[in-house]
Amino acid sequence: MTTQPAIEPTLRAMADRLRALLAARGIGDPCMVGIHTGGVWVARRLHELLDLREPLGALDISFYRDDFSRIGMHPQVKPSNLPFDIEGRHIILVDDVLYTGRTIRAALNELFDYGRPASVTLAVLVERSGRELPIQADVAGLQMDLEADQQVKLSGPDDLALTVQSHADR
Amino acid sequence: MPIDKLQQDANGNLRHFLTLEGLSRSVLTEILDLAESFITVDAQSVKKVPLLRGKTIANLFFESSTRTRTTFELAAKRLSADVLNINIQTSATSKGESLLDMLHNLEAMHCDMFVVRHADSGAAHFIARHVAPHVSVVNAGDGRHAHPTQGMLDMFTIRRHKGPDFGALRVAIVGDIMHSRVARSQIHALNTLGVGELRVIAPKTLVPPEASALGVHVFHDMARGLKDVDVVIMLRLQRERMQGALIPSGGEFFQLYGLNADMLAQAKPDAIVMHPGPINRGIEIDSAVADGEQSVILEQVSNGIAVRMAVMSMCLGRAAGEGA
Image (tube, each protein chain N blue to C red):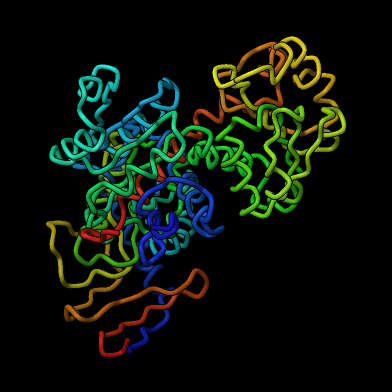
């Protein structure tokens, strides 16, 4: 098991890059949505750093997973909460780890069931290897080249910390 | 097969949903929590989630009930399942085909779930014992026995208004306890969830002999029974099931056991009023109360969709290939 260094500086760098990206795209008043659970923790800090006007939204993609018929219902579903109308809005979608891309695909499907956003910008704390769908982050805090049997996990919600585990560790 | 083994798999996951009797508090709480998440689907412009895409659910209503069938149908459609409403009156069973032959034909059409309503107690249980391993059965009301989704939507409605601590609540169920499968399911659920005090209020002729064994306090006086309760659940007078002169008349029943504003004043000021519907206005409940501020009767209908979504997705969310 490997413990990563403190991630506050990474989050600050992400906020700076998001600010620059939004300015370059001419986006003035975006809405931020975190994906349960780790994505919400990351989004909470980014939301503060960017000082966004709209309250933070949260998505639980459990009902949109493509492996429901294989693994069944996730026992701890948290309600999604989008406290703003997303129709025509610029959305910053935030997750902790981008791995296969399936979670992001599910989150995009769910977002579009709430309305048609003007754009979606994807920000992730960690972009790791192992993509199975053609999805990439607009802003990634860290890049990790990991083996298939390795897992990167964010712990929180206070004092966010990353750990990398391999199956042999578990 | 004992019903708990029929209803749940070896891991405790719901396979069928036939009765609340014997289900643990954790299973009931999981249903309520999941229903809470499904409520948010109403906030979406597309009021659907893709959870049961590709699944087929057949509504088999041997006893008519437009409201219950419609909420089951809506729940299935909001989960993106395909729904068949089988009109039993014109189906082959009325031409002499056996029930089991009809079920096997529906299985051959790759149905994944049967939602069954039947006038005979135990009908859903019987069907569950004979379906293929991949098929789930949900009881939408059988005789006088059980109506478990109604019981759970009532618990959901109470929890949304009164919070998760059922131990702090005093609940009264009023009316035709004897013939009510709804009351039986409510009593099982409230006891399992640890309700503080459970009362039933009814004339002696409409209280089943086993009532006190179910852990309820029986009252025959409406005003005393309603004193300081947090929740008032009125039951429908089952006039079509009433055999013999169990009550003198609807008018007299209303005088003694009907809920009007004066009677409701005995309960706590923030008490909620519930009714499983359809309401017999002026027999069980006064219109002013049914439509009043303390009434949550229409919310019960909306909540029924979320609860049925939860039950359906839990039954069909077993790992693939996991049978009995």
